[in-house]
Amino acid sequence: MTVELVARLSDAVVSAQQGAQRQLELTLTAQRQQQERAPLNLCLILDHSGSMAGDPLAMVKRAAQSLVDRLVAGDRLAVVAFDHHAKVLVPNQVVRDKETIKAKIATLEANGGTAIDHGMKLGLEQLAQGKQGTISQAFLLTDGENEHGDNKRCLDLAKLAAEYNITLNTLGFGVHWNQDVLEQIADAARGRLVFIEYAEQAIASFQALFQHISTVDFTNAHVVLTLSNLTQLADFKPVTQVAPDTIELSYETHGADQYTIRVGDLSATIKRTLLITLYTQPLPLGTHVIGAVQVRYDDPVRQQSGLLSERIPLTLEAVADHTPTVDPQVQQSIFTVEKYRKTQIAETKLQSGDTAGAATFLQSAAKTALQMGDTEAAKVLQESATELQQQSALSESARKRTRMASKTVLSKSP
Image (tube, rainbow, N blue to C red; front, side):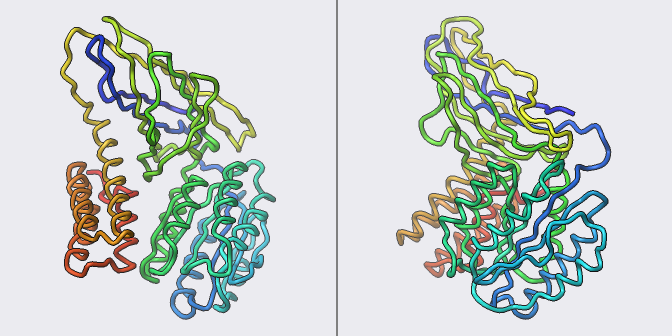
């Protein structure tokens, strides 16, 4: 097994003796050879606070039980429940007696407040017990604010999870959860943010996320980018993941010319795509190698770390006079970033009380979504813009739908 890395510049030609900006699109895919998936080490971290009483908790328990049925020989599972405290409902174990596990999940009752970080800490401790030879993933579900916990501690725990090769996926249930906190947790631990607006969506949402994590083959993947002295990263947010979700990525520098970007898990069926903005110095006529890119990753099943993909050179051709033309595939990634950033600006304006400005940027984001063929996201963003224009405010559900539309391509590819 290895990693396929495809590097594509927005335009591989520049005018000689002129500086230029170019977007570098990187697509990373695991090349799976075996038919069976890698063993999972899964922890469900479930909010059972008082606000989950009734249908919400009943549906979450059914959703959790549905995942137990999908686990196979060699998979491990732990279940942690939290209100304003946290407890281990099912200790980390190889799944053998599914009916007993499902019976324990069925005992959950709604009570107390919400302390997300307590649940996270206990969940990570459980996952640590089953990491060897597995793909470690957590589902963190909550329906409320972290009123009995510490949001900074949540983010610190998410960063710790990333360091230990554990992916945290967050599921916001209902409309009263803190979208900033759950998004930051998922982004830091390179997981996915899921919005379950209605209780009856819980099972389908759990199943879809489980299907996603079941495709993971490699973990702890890093892009290693080396640039020549003719090229540099852009100053402002130069690295963005555009698929499967949009995330602004940080990077580490090594010397004057090497950058390392952590991207997390790699799948054989779900592409992970990055967009990197570069600036080049004026180049003389001819072909120039402006850098190279490679992926470093771990294979947890074979217990191998620091594996390397093929190293891909990055070249630009400088000609006497060039009219820029953007590669259509890279243009889609550029649109994805534009949609995300316009929505971010809209949220900032809304927070400052500029509802008219927020509506304008949401309308612009909707147009960008249409340009990239994401008609579902365009519909959500335009509906939010219209709600702002008519009511000078956004409902909690509209805010969350807007955030999801900004981060994810909602329309399936034809």
